[in-house]
Image (cartoon, rainbow, N blue to C red; front, side, top):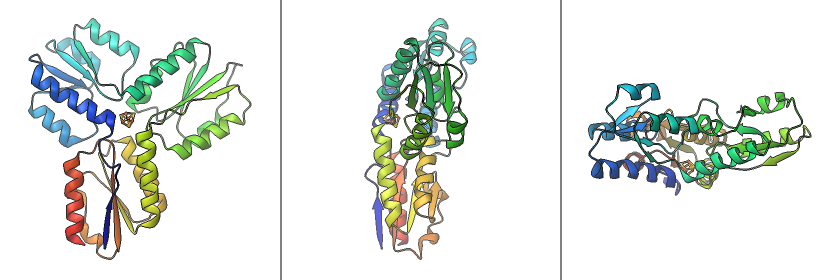
Amino acid sequence: MQVTLAKSAGFCFGVTRAVDLVYHQIKDNEGPIYTYGPIIHNEEVVKDLESKGVQVVNDLSELKKLKKGTIIVRSHGISEKEYQLIKENGFQIVDATCPFVLKIHKLVEQYSKKGYYVIIIGNQAHPEVQGICGWVSGKNVSVMNSLEEAQKFQLESDMPVCIVSQTTFNLNKFKDMVEILQKKGYDIIVLNTICSATEERQTEARELAKKLDAMIVIGGKNSSNTQKLFEICKNECANTYYIQTSDDMDYTKLKSVNNVGITAGASTPKNIIEEVSKNVRNEL
Ligand code: SF4
């Protein structure tokens, strides 16, 4: 019986930085502290911050009714307009946008200003993608999430095309979508902006899922990178479980397996991963 914990499981660099920034603000900042959206997709961490007085602002229209203070921008980043709106409402900004996301903001801004049509491969509903869209100069931008959408895409002009990706997108799917778009004969520049933390986590998860009897993927139900990890593992190993905390797992299901792999999304705290690992080992 073997339990393998993925080396890449848990907080990535950008999430560690964002969460640390909030805790530093709690220590150093006396005014009200708000995060624009939950700082990470993890209910446990958000609850702990709330207990320390950090409030979540879900919509900037709420700012008018709030006592002035500091707004922390989370690792997903925001659009240029949102930065302006926060400042206009008299709030301080502490920017925890991951540097890898900031790089995409700069790229789409530069390329759109140079006359490129921007294609963002990612989920339109994800705040990171919405933030990236907000840095494209003009309206020449499309977001697509599937091979079908890539196939259907038609550019109505002869503009050159710049393709970027949501940082947490599945690498193989990104490559497949790019291949479809490249066959359309546009003048294309491809910028693979999937972050290496995501690539490493996905590759390691895939390798583990290929060889092990069962996989446990831990992460918030709204965490897009955890959902993708689950997809990848489930493709390789039918016996894959998606849980948020140890309480969600029925460990008796692992009775008949010889080995189990554990991985976790970028916003899963270490203590949850450790608890799941401990319980799996106890069960085995
Ligand atoms: S997954 Fe990558 S891009 Fe996203 S926050 Fe973490 S380090 Fe930054």
